[in-house]
Image (cartoon, rainbow, N blue to C red):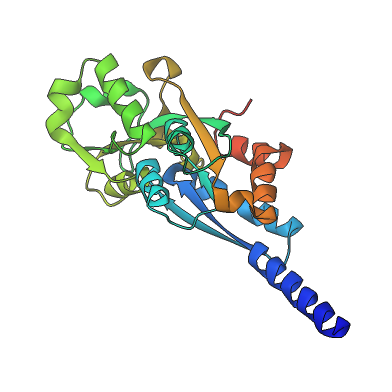
Length: 243
Protein backbone atom coordinates (compact mmCIF):
# COMPACT_ATOMS: atom_id res chain seq x y z
CA UNK A 1 0.00 0.00 0.00
CA UNK A 2 2.82 2.41 0.88
CA UNK A 3 4.51 1.60 -2.42
CA UNK A 4 1.30 2.33 -4.33
CA UNK A 5 0.88 5.65 -2.54
CA UNK A 6 4.51 6.55 -3.19
CA UNK A 7 4.10 5.85 -6.91
CA UNK A 8 0.87 7.88 -6.92
CA UNK A 9 2.55 10.96 -5.45
CA UNK A 10 5.54 10.66 -7.80
CA UNK A 11 3.24 10.47 -10.81
CA UNK A 12 1.17 13.40 -9.49
CA UNK A 13 4.34 15.42 -8.99
CA UNK A 14 5.55 14.69 -12.50
CA UNK A 15 2.16 15.69 -13.83
CA UNK A 16 2.34 19.00 -12.01
CA UNK A 17 5.80 19.66 -13.35
CA UNK A 18 4.59 18.88 -16.84
CA UNK A 19 1.75 21.36 -16.53
CA UNK A 20 4.09 24.05 -15.21
CA UNK A 21 6.67 23.46 -17.95
CA UNK A 22 4.80 25.53 -20.50
CA UNK A 23 3.12 28.91 -20.61
CA UNK A 24 1.01 30.89 -23.04
CA UNK A 25 1.70 34.61 -23.30
CA UNK A 26 -0.56 37.17 -24.99
CA UNK A 27 1.54 40.04 -26.31
CA UNK A 28 0.61 43.32 -27.97
CA UNK A 29 1.70 43.47 -31.62
CA UNK A 30 4.36 46.14 -31.00
CA UNK A 31 6.22 43.53 -28.93
CA UNK A 32 6.61 41.01 -31.77
CA UNK A 33 10.39 41.35 -31.96
CA UNK A 34 11.17 42.30 -28.36
CA UNK A 35 9.09 39.60 -26.70
CA UNK A 36 10.55 36.93 -28.98
CA UNK A 37 14.05 38.06 -27.95
CA UNK A 38 13.04 37.97 -24.28
CA UNK A 39 11.61 34.49 -24.78
CA UNK A 40 14.86 33.18 -26.27
CA UNK A 41 16.92 34.67 -23.44
CA UNK A 42 14.53 33.21 -20.88
CA UNK A 43 14.67 29.72 -22.42
CA UNK A 44 18.46 29.69 -22.08
CA UNK A 45 17.94 29.86 -18.33
CA UNK A 46 14.93 27.54 -18.34
CA UNK A 47 15.71 24.68 -20.73
CA UNK A 48 13.17 21.93 -21.37
CA UNK A 49 10.29 24.40 -21.02
CA UNK A 50 8.02 25.93 -23.63
CA UNK A 51 6.83 29.52 -24.02
CA UNK A 52 4.07 30.11 -26.56
CA UNK A 53 3.58 33.66 -27.79
CA UNK A 54 0.39 35.02 -29.37
CA UNK A 55 0.30 38.56 -30.76
CA UNK A 56 -2.52 40.95 -31.59
CA UNK A 57 -3.95 44.32 -30.68
CA UNK A 58 -4.30 44.93 -26.95
CA UNK A 59 -8.05 45.33 -27.39
CA UNK A 60 -8.52 42.00 -29.13
CA UNK A 61 -6.28 40.14 -26.66
CA UNK A 62 -8.20 41.69 -23.77
CA UNK A 63 -11.46 40.45 -25.28
CA UNK A 64 -10.05 36.95 -25.74
CA UNK A 65 -8.91 36.76 -22.12
CA UNK A 66 -12.24 38.17 -20.95
CA UNK A 67 -13.95 35.36 -22.87
CA UNK A 68 -11.79 32.68 -21.23
CA UNK A 69 -8.77 32.28 -23.54
CA UNK A 70 -6.17 30.20 -21.61
CA UNK A 71 -3.36 32.76 -21.39
CA UNK A 72 -1.02 32.85 -18.39
CA UNK A 73 0.29 36.38 -18.92
CA UNK A 74 -1.07 39.44 -20.72
CA UNK A 75 1.65 41.85 -21.91
CA UNK A 76 -0.36 44.82 -23.13
CA UNK A 77 0.48 48.01 -25.00
CA UNK A 78 -1.43 50.01 -22.40
CA UNK A 79 -2.31 49.83 -18.72
CA UNK A 80 -6.04 50.41 -19.19
CA UNK A 81 -6.89 46.91 -20.38
CA UNK A 82 -4.86 44.98 -17.79
CA UNK A 83 -6.50 47.20 -15.16
CA UNK A 84 -9.93 46.39 -16.56
CA UNK A 85 -9.18 42.67 -16.14
CA UNK A 86 -8.53 43.40 -12.47
CA UNK A 87 -11.63 45.58 -12.12
CA UNK A 88 -13.77 42.93 -13.80
CA UNK A 89 -12.32 40.31 -11.44
CA UNK A 90 -10.95 38.30 -14.36
CA UNK A 91 -7.65 38.31 -12.51
CA UNK A 92 -6.72 38.99 -8.91
CA UNK A 93 -3.11 39.91 -9.67
CA UNK A 94 -1.63 43.41 -9.75
CA UNK A 95 -0.72 45.12 -13.03
CA UNK A 96 2.89 46.21 -13.53
CA UNK A 97 4.20 48.81 -15.96
CA UNK A 98 7.22 47.44 -17.79
CA UNK A 99 7.98 50.14 -20.39
CA UNK A 100 6.83 53.18 -22.34
CA UNK A 101 6.37 52.85 -26.07
CA UNK A 102 7.83 55.21 -28.69
CA UNK A 103 5.78 56.28 -31.72
CA UNK A 104 7.32 56.72 -35.18
CA UNK A 105 6.17 57.84 -38.60
CA UNK A 106 7.67 55.68 -41.33
CA UNK A 107 7.71 54.80 -45.01
CA UNK A 108 9.18 51.99 -47.06
CA UNK A 109 9.71 54.11 -50.16
CA UNK A 110 10.26 57.65 -48.87
CA UNK A 111 12.66 59.49 -46.61
CA UNK A 112 10.93 60.69 -43.44
CA UNK A 113 12.99 63.56 -41.98
CA UNK A 114 10.13 65.11 -39.99
CA UNK A 115 6.38 65.21 -39.47
CA UNK A 116 6.19 67.69 -42.32
CA UNK A 117 5.90 64.76 -44.74
CA UNK A 118 2.30 64.52 -43.53
CA UNK A 119 1.70 67.76 -45.41
CA UNK A 120 3.12 66.35 -48.64
CA UNK A 121 1.26 64.55 -51.41
CA UNK A 122 0.31 60.93 -50.69
CA UNK A 123 -2.69 58.65 -51.03
CA UNK A 124 -2.85 56.61 -47.83
CA UNK A 125 -1.68 56.85 -44.22
CA UNK A 126 -1.71 53.61 -42.21
CA UNK A 127 -2.21 53.33 -38.46
CA UNK A 128 -3.58 50.88 -35.92
CA UNK A 129 -7.24 51.19 -34.98
CA UNK A 130 -7.38 53.73 -32.11
CA UNK A 131 -10.22 51.76 -30.52
CA UNK A 132 -8.07 48.62 -30.28
CA UNK A 133 -4.46 49.77 -30.05
CA UNK A 134 -2.77 52.47 -27.94
CA UNK A 135 -0.37 53.30 -30.77
CA UNK A 136 -3.39 54.05 -32.95
CA UNK A 137 -4.75 56.37 -30.29
CA UNK A 138 -1.38 58.13 -30.10
CA UNK A 139 -1.31 58.45 -33.90
CA UNK A 140 -4.63 60.28 -33.89
CA UNK A 141 -3.37 62.57 -31.13
CA UNK A 142 -0.46 63.57 -33.39
CA UNK A 143 -2.82 64.47 -36.23
CA UNK A 144 -4.98 66.48 -33.82
CA UNK A 145 -1.91 68.29 -32.51
CA UNK A 146 -0.88 69.20 -36.06
CA UNK A 147 -4.50 70.12 -36.95
CA UNK A 148 -4.38 67.68 -39.85
CA UNK A 149 -7.24 65.37 -38.90
CA UNK A 150 -9.95 66.81 -41.19
CA UNK A 151 -7.73 66.77 -44.28
CA UNK A 152 -6.12 63.38 -43.69
CA UNK A 153 -9.09 61.41 -42.34
CA UNK A 154 -10.16 60.19 -45.81
CA UNK A 155 -6.63 58.89 -46.41
CA UNK A 156 -6.34 56.83 -43.22
CA UNK A 157 -6.12 53.05 -43.50
CA UNK A 158 -6.84 51.38 -40.16
CA UNK A 159 -5.27 48.07 -39.22
CA UNK A 160 -6.66 45.77 -36.57
CA UNK A 161 -3.21 45.94 -34.96
CA UNK A 162 0.02 47.82 -35.48
CA UNK A 163 1.34 44.74 -37.30
CA UNK A 164 -1.43 44.98 -39.89
CA UNK A 165 -0.89 48.73 -40.26
CA UNK A 166 2.80 48.03 -40.89
CA UNK A 167 1.85 45.49 -43.54
CA UNK A 168 -0.07 48.17 -45.42
CA UNK A 169 3.10 50.24 -45.62
CA UNK A 170 5.43 47.32 -46.35
CA UNK A 171 3.22 46.13 -49.22
CA UNK A 172 2.91 49.59 -50.75
CA UNK A 173 -0.75 49.95 -49.87
CA UNK A 174 0.09 53.09 -47.90
CA UNK A 175 2.97 55.46 -48.53
CA UNK A 176 3.20 56.50 -44.87
CA UNK A 177 2.31 54.90 -41.58
CA UNK A 178 2.52 55.34 -37.83
CA UNK A 179 4.23 52.52 -35.98
CA UNK A 180 6.34 51.60 -32.97
CA UNK A 181 10.09 52.19 -32.80
CA UNK A 182 10.41 48.60 -31.58
CA UNK A 183 9.37 47.33 -35.02
CA UNK A 184 11.64 49.52 -37.13
CA UNK A 185 14.69 48.44 -39.14
CA UNK A 186 17.51 50.27 -37.35
CA UNK A 187 19.72 49.83 -40.42
CA UNK A 188 17.59 52.40 -42.27
CA UNK A 189 16.82 55.22 -39.83
CA UNK A 190 16.26 57.61 -42.73
CA UNK A 191 12.94 55.88 -43.40
CA UNK A 192 11.40 56.61 -40.01
CA UNK A 193 11.05 59.62 -37.75
CA UNK A 194 10.69 59.39 -33.98
CA UNK A 195 7.66 61.48 -33.06
CA UNK A 196 8.49 63.97 -30.27
CA UNK A 197 6.87 62.85 -27.03
CA UNK A 198 5.00 66.14 -26.59
CA UNK A 199 2.77 65.23 -29.55
CA UNK A 200 1.00 62.34 -27.80
CA UNK A 201 0.12 61.00 -24.38
CA UNK A 202 2.65 58.58 -22.85
CA UNK A 203 2.17 55.00 -24.02
CA UNK A 204 2.52 53.27 -20.67
CA UNK A 205 2.66 49.53 -21.29
CA UNK A 206 1.64 47.15 -18.51
CA UNK A 207 1.37 43.43 -17.92
CA UNK A 208 -0.67 41.23 -15.63
CA UNK A 209 -0.76 37.57 -14.70
CA UNK A 210 -4.06 35.79 -15.17
CA UNK A 211 -5.40 33.68 -12.32
CA UNK A 212 -4.16 30.59 -14.17
CA UNK A 213 -0.76 32.15 -14.69
CA UNK A 214 -0.47 33.08 -11.04
CA UNK A 215 -0.60 29.37 -10.19
CA UNK A 216 2.11 28.55 -12.73
CA UNK A 217 5.65 28.97 -11.41
CA UNK A 218 7.03 29.25 -14.95
CA UNK A 219 4.64 32.12 -15.76
CA UNK A 220 5.69 33.94 -12.60
CA UNK A 221 9.34 33.38 -13.50
CA UNK A 222 8.79 34.73 -17.02
CA UNK A 223 7.06 37.81 -15.63
CA UNK A 224 9.98 38.49 -13.28
CA UNK A 225 12.51 37.92 -16.07
CA UNK A 226 10.75 40.45 -18.29
CA UNK A 227 10.62 42.99 -15.45
CA UNK A 228 14.18 42.27 -14.31
CA UNK A 229 17.58 43.60 -15.49
CA UNK A 230 17.91 41.23 -18.47
CA UNK A 231 14.41 41.92 -19.70
CA UNK A 232 14.95 45.67 -19.37
CA UNK A 233 18.16 45.53 -21.41
CA UNK A 234 16.33 43.76 -24.22
CA UNK A 235 13.40 46.19 -24.12
CA UNK A 236 15.78 49.16 -24.27
CA UNK A 237 17.58 47.63 -27.24
CA UNK A 238 14.27 47.69 -29.13
CA UNK A 239 13.67 51.35 -28.38
CA UNK A 240 11.37 51.19 -25.37
CA UNK A 241 11.74 53.68 -22.54
CA UNK A 242 12.44 51.70 -19.38
CA UNK A 243 12.79 53.22 -15.92
